[in-house]
Amino acid sequence: MLRVKSVKNITPINILIDEYIPLKIVFGDYAQSVEPTIYWYTGDFKKNYIEIGFGKENGIIRSITLLIINDIKKDEVKIDCDRFVIGLPVFERITFDESSLYVKEEGPLKMIIDNNNVYIFISENKICSKIICGQISFFLDADNYFCGFVVESLSDKEIRGIEDTIQFKLSYKN
Image (cartoon, rainbow, N blue to C red):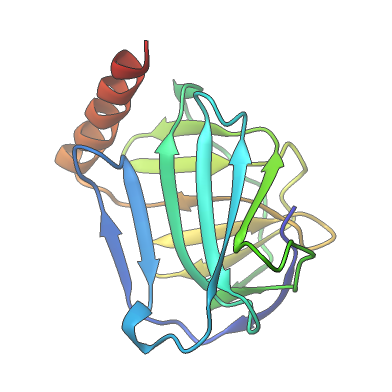
């Protein structure tokens, strides 16, 4: 699991939804990155798969890409957590094979749509704090491990776009 070691100032966020990628969030400007990006993957790697990119040395989150997800629910989400900071998560350095910039760690992955908010959970741990960055909140457990995030205030069209892309990808895989 990814552990947050600190928080940095907020950078511009770009949320992308298209017919091939259900949800991609880009933080800051990749063109200005001078260090390689580590890509950390979790899910079951079949019908549940998410990628999180962050700086190899500085640990600053650069992107989140939901590649495919099968575990989707429409439900009300209540997160009892009043501890939060404003900013962008910085992850601790992780151990990985230096010949590759890709790290796979099998784990849970589920999505809940609550009105115009999309919640993605990568852990069952209790959420104890949040890092708020614009319309995105990152969830952390008591030990600062990354548990998931929410993208808030999406339009009905954006929600439909996410759902349609997921359904297309799931039907294409079968």
